[in-house]
Image (cartoon, rainbow, N blue to C red):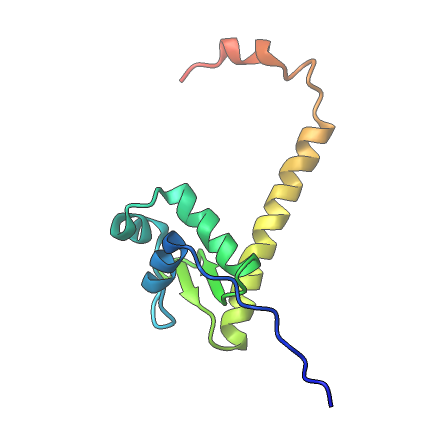
Length: 119
């Protein structure tokens, strides 16, 4: 019987290991916390978390639930569903924004309209 070989696991780069080491299954860790503890800018932290999930297949979720927002390690189906719900709602928000831009009359909403806007 022939043995099936798993493809070798990709080694996590140092910034990815630093971010992953801070994220816990026991509590939510905000982007600000991760950034402060690692010295990695917030936008790069978000990119690293995306890489952890899509490239390195690490079960990292995120949530914006009031009072319980941040990154977390997914440990069960409830966690997975929470992370999926958060991403799906972001996708819907972005889809609505794309649709609005596609349907917008840029002739009446072009650069000239902003000149009269007072702040």
